[in-house]
Image (tube, rainbow, N blue to C red; front, side, top):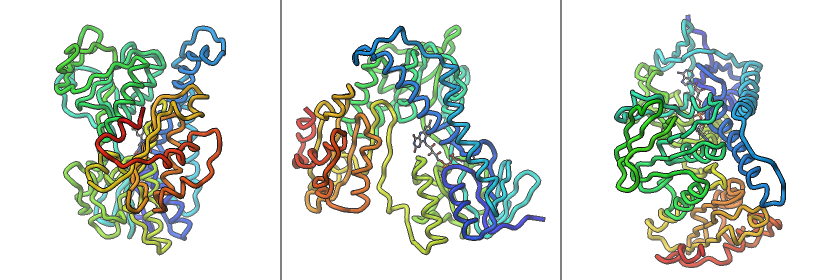
Amino acid sequence: MATTYDAIIIGTGQAGPFLARRLTGAGMKVAIIERKLFGGTCVNTGCIPTKTLVASAYAARMARRANEFGVVTGAVSVDMKRVKARKDEVSGQSRTGLEGWLKSMKHCTVYEGHARFESPREVSVGAERLTAERIFINVGGRASTPRMPGLEQVAYLTNSSMMDIDFLPGHLIIVGGSYIGLEFGQMFRRFGSEVTIIEMAGSLIQREDEDVSSAIKEILEQEGVHIRLNAKCIGFSRHGEEIAAQVDCTIGAPEVIGTHVLLAVGRSPNTGDLGLEKAGVSVDSRGYIVVDDQLRTSVPGIWALGDCNGKGAFTHTSFNDGEIVAANLLDNDPRRVSDRVPAYALYIDPPLGRAGLTEAEVRKSRRSALLGKRPMTKVGRAVEKGETQGFMKIVVDAQTGEILGAAILGTGGDEVIHSILDVMYAKAPYTVIQRAMHIHPTVSELIPTMLGELQPLTEKAGADMAR
Ligand SMILES: Cc1cc2nc3c(=O)[nH]c(=O)nc-3n(C[C@H](O)[C@H](O)[C@H](O)COP(=O)(O)OP(=O)(O)OC[C@H]3O[C@@H](n4cnc5c(N)ncnc54)[C@H](O)[C@@H]3O)c2cc1C
């Protein structure tokens, strides 16, 4: 006999718990199912632990730079056991807080185990059968492990197993020069490891503009991170106690010898073991659940939220998915995924805050546009803090004055970007920010100044303006 609920939520990632609160608040009887750690990727192996580790790495960096600020310290060393303990505490508090909240939520029943569809309205968890008219899938994703020659001969790490590291790797080889790889790369360099990042493409974080990508490369290289681009034929073999990574680049040594390998080459959705075929839910060729603009799957009464739907790969996109579904179901508010402005951050130091289109995407669209750009060396707050790496830039539609996109690579960039993001969401012209009085001394105070110096987006503009 199946137990009947008004709604079943599979997974306790970034959308599920919020949705449970909204649905129970509306008087529904809800079941939520978690097979492993409450809070999913962000809480346990993603954002929260990595940003806690980034904070330790920043402290190490500033301790080493103390002399520049007139502060006298002794030799600086990093105790990796304490770094990990701090990370475990922050992440653990978040996990147990969420677990306790769900377990004490009125009208909500928590099941612990692997959920699987038995039919479009029925889910099994071990021997239990649950049924509901509405089912929400929030199963997230995991690190991809693509086939690479020799990978089976060597031990490798992923973002999940990195969480167990309580020692300093001698030489960490990171495969993948995107967000996850770069964050771990800079962090472990600051802890004291030798680090090599191997990237198949010709630039780091390929989706970014060339100037952003090369500034990031420079920032990392200045700290002693080795970067190998155009690594077309990556493979591995054992080299005594160590690991050899074949890079086969056109320049540089053909092999990198390291002590540990981290694979950071993308994510795959957790949809293969969910019994989706029994429910008739469609997935695309990469396993992402196909959804419409309001996150409905191909089967009426089943929704997919978060990383498993391929519409976003961030905590804020997953949480926003939950808000969209709740608004449509409970508030008679037809919110849509296409309403949101793409936004994200890269948490190297200094961070990159991004909103909307890149400059390259605007150029490709051939619309008439204006560009503003300012190096952080011309931002007083950055100079005062001794953190002048990077730049900020913004692209504006020349006809409507709407902001099309922005990148702030510099101290506080992850926070400052929101002043631009909110105006973009409001579809207001850039003059709204330009006329606002911003606080001194901040990085944000230079955004109106940058907007007062816009120039037509020509072939040359950009390169010249950054000087
Ligand atoms: C190293 C790293 C750093 C990151 N940093 C950031 C960042 O700084 N900012 C940011 O916005 N994003 C970041 N992300 C991405 C972010 O973590 C994810 O986008 C976010 O967690 C997506 O959450 P979700 O709701 O889709 O699912 P998840 O958080 O992945 O949760 C899914 C849950 O479902 C459970 N589950 C899966 N299958 C089943 C099943 N069959 N039955 C029961 N339960 C199941 C899982 O155990 C898991 O708990 C990072 C990711 C990584 C890997």
